[in-house]
Amino acid sequence: MSTENEGNAVPPAPSAPPVPVDAPAAAPAPQEQAGRAGHGPQDQAAQGPYGQGAAGEPAGPGGPTGPGDAGGHGTPGGYAGPAGPGVTSSAPDPSWPPPPPPAGPYGDGGSGSGPGGWGSSYQQPAPKSGRGRGGLIAGILVAALVAGGVGGGLGYTLAKDNDENTGSTTVSASTNGGDVKRDPGTVAGVTAKALPSTVTIQAESDSGEGGTGTGFVFDKQGHIVTNNHVVADAVDGGKLSATFPDGKKYDAEVIGNAQGYDVAVIKLKNAPSDLRPLTLGDSDKVAVGDATIAIGAPFGLSDTVTTGIISAKNRPVASSDGSGSQASYMSALQTDASINPGNSGGPLLDARGNVIGINSAIQSTGNGGFGTGQSGSIGLGFAIPINQAKYVAQELIKNGKPVYAKIGASVSLDESSGGAQITDEGAGNSAPVEPGGPAAKAGLKPGDVITKLDDRVIDSGPTLIGEIWTHKPGDTVTLTYERDGKERTVEVTLGSRVGD
Image 1: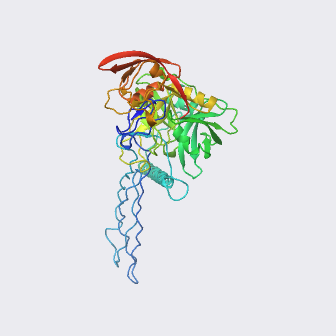
Image 2: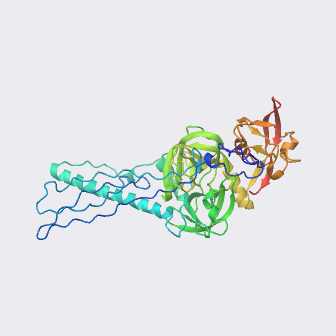
Image 3: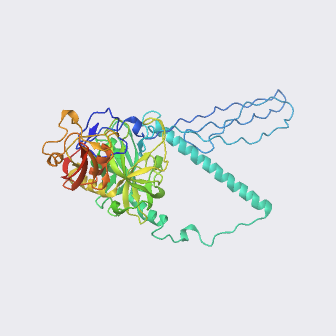
């Protein structure tokens, strides 16, 4: 397979047809990427009736409580089973009352990724009609909250009884949480400043399908930057809204979207005058080990903050929503900050609160396909570098369409070529090297294997795509390639392609 788009660490199957480098590539093969997660069903035991005592005798005690069924999404403690049938007796039962039942096991939610592949961190609930995944998510959240409430109440009662029985006293802090000074460089300080400029995005198509993602304020005119896959359902006339942490909700519209970059810009309708855009950092200056802060709405839990570090830079990643749409390519920032479905489009911040990336994808370990489960973070999250995203967003605001850099050649997406090999045939029977294009002017030919772009090692077609798209049209790059066993270098001035 070949493509003119730059790259991903997870190329499609070798049997795929070639795609021009200046056209969007097809989605990677299913075995190479993870789908977005769903939730497994949650079983509940039916309640058994209490037995009745014989006529004229008191009712016998109820049977012991049954164990809890496995929850559908890892709810702590599961559900306790209901009371079993009673025992008819006319004499007191010395074993009554029975001991309290053990907590049920953690539920094992269904996995939602393709084997070993890349997944998006977008939350995709089911359509409104019928009982879909959205209903299951709500049920799971309720169960978790109820369990937390019961545990808290029980803990308070036990502590109170212990104090009364032992006469022990507690020691109170001299200051409460609100009096603690939180410096600007702390996670709490950065979060307090950044949260008011993030939004939870709800996108819905005309058919009722959609999901939840995240975005952040880009400018004072009301533009919000997010992922393309977050708003894709609303691109052709669906419903779109953005909700701030203070609960204020605004209708919005898609200004422009870029499938290949996986970047989109929406604009708030009747935007408030006091918007505070987040400060954009310089992703080129990020170093491995730098602290990171991610903000998003994982599994619909708005305004969630997680922390980590930059685990790697220039990580070639190809991601797709699993629906058969074209793949998105990035030379990503890798972070171990917890990123889950619903974090998509949210900002990845540095320790000073500057945006250094847009959280977009995760690696997951499940074996299910798209929509078959909701897999979560395993510490491998990927963000679009903000330098690239800023350029794309500005083009979308200006023109409504993305502009891609290109070399004007079709390259193989196979991993076995040891680089990005220019194919013998182009996509759709087109020429493998565009006549008069950048590659042709540089003397590149079918069969040439590109192994470096400037100082970046190119190990596959997707990697080349990702690296080219970190540049702008008109940039001059140095390509290292092999022909007939000999290594050569050539300078190439990148061309441009408008639209997906």
